[in-house]
Image (tube, rainbow, N blue to C red; front, side, top):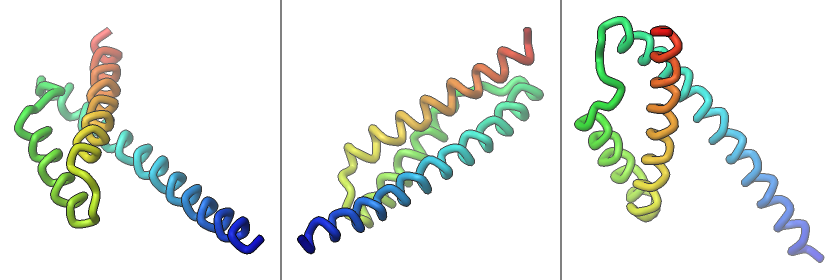
Length: 97
């Protein structure tokens, strides 16, 4: 049936987008690791409340422009930022020990 072929094509496109998402997050983590090195060298805190709020606000604005729900964007980026903070903490603690 034609719709089976179309569903497969669309799913293949989703797979590619998911791959891009993973690659983008891996790059984001690498940048966060570089930030952790700078923070560790200058005794700066991992958690910066104003920056986290700035990120959430901007990402929600970006998401709204694409028709995405604000709640979804907030949950998504809180999860992303949580992983970034965990990775930074691990790196900083590894340098201290």
